[in-house]
Length: 350
Ligand code: A2P
View 1 (cartoon, protein in one colour):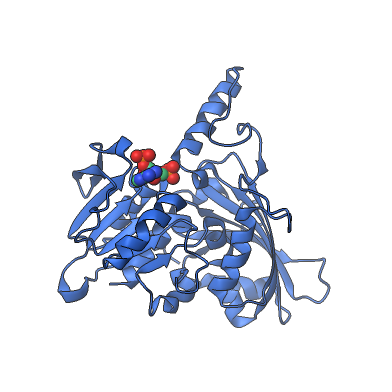
View 2 (cartoon, helix red, strand yellow):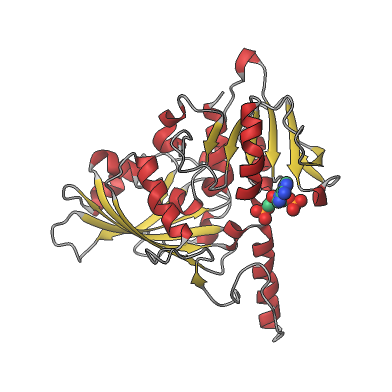
């Protein structure tokens, strides 16, 4: 498949005009990519409003060759805005998005604030674009690890129902924002120079280390919030409440692309060749499975790409029934895991 980043949108808004768009959290790691995706995908924009905290008011960011001044988010920010892409954290979304939605702006929210609400569609366009129907002006963008894990799994699920999935994630710094990416770089520099470094953004030393995802653990289940999101969101997006899922989420010292090791069990037997055949034409997926050269998906290769890379496609030998497959995938957390998926959702509204 061609890279999804190359696919143009080329449609317009209601009444034949281009929509007015706002990016909330425009100065953040995802915000900058949202602006980039609007531009690279040729999303029609009449006016682009860039919003962030007071700290960033007056800064400028480029869009289509022009510098746009960032404004501080305020209650009147959404006047005349048709579509607002939010990536400023759950607290800001909870505080601001419902009012904006009530006033008529369609909010596409990157936080987890509304994802599991029954009246909010949770959408990966390659999987459940139909869920957008009848939305109430808030649409949720799924968790980045869920997107990287299940975008390639959906076409398999359609042919041979996936009953069970076991996933371990290798999550990049970008998922914790621009400050976490800077902390990875700074702590790596300090480590190499033999200097002490006190982590400020993440809870543990990050350079040459990895740790269990930095979200709270539910004492009742032993799973952290990120794992709970991956499990719950997958069931909601697949529309399959019965799917059995086990997730382990780990933060690794990589800048911007997540990787996942995934094993799934189907209803009926399935072979690695059948999986390859299905994935060959799957939208948003690229097979990288060069056994001879031991070349498989890597965060470095996934960075800057819209597609999810999938490889190491093999039988799960622990399941003698032949129903289980293991693979390794990598996808750009900032693009398909966040900004690109949100802009693809916006395209479905045109
Ligand atoms: P700012 O840069 O002014 O702090 P990241 O996910 O990379 O940490 O980025 C978070 C984004 O959310 C940034 O653009 C940040 O703006 C923005 N943001 C954080 N808090 C608020 C807030 N209270 N109101 C508006 N924007 C916010």
